[in-house]
Length: 319
Image (cartoon, rainbow, N blue to C red; front, side, top):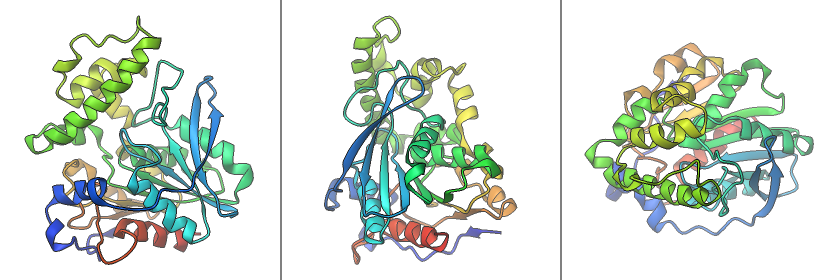
């Protein structure tokens, strides 16, 4: 029963509040930029993905997937790049479609359940690496967990382990949580950023994307009903959430996989703590620190945050 509720993470006293732990890294963490080499690859539908490599000359690599409206330069990504580079791993920071600083070519962009692009990245780098490990944050963690669960025992043999951090594995539950008043600043920041991407994309697809009334959107249900679902072939927001939630795929996981979700994560409701799935699948490990916020886990006394060290420990164990 790989469920770990008594972990060794304790938030610094001044950041015991879940919102402070969530926002502190974005506002105040100082970490050196990753020394990236960018490579653009084509997708089967004639679009593109931008990958940022940080190489050490290793035959082992870690693919890192960012969260909603993130990219490879976010401090939670670069922190993970540095800890694995320091240990002799190459890293491949995947920018989802439209997140690398340039709008993608296709009408569609990225969403929480799109695993085909991750497979494209794995196919692209597999000839160069004997061992590949996966790390995903938030939305990227949901994509990663869904991919691993979908593949089950047919997952490529060089994919050795996976770590997911602060993941809304139940998208309906998380969307409901994000509608609460205490999350209004996060929610509106995400919706505003997504609106900027839609504005840019509407220039290429004026007949397919209308921004009339966009300013009235206040929830992810409204946004996903109007844009995410129809642009990606879903009936409505609930259909999108149901088909894309990794919670429904965890039973298929066949490689060592760790999910770290803090119990005080402001983005996650009860459905995002899949204790039953972890109890039933010896390959799926669930760790639930009492605090840590959303992609927080701030550590003042050391170079790396607790979540980075925990991911490193898990992957080294299964290297």
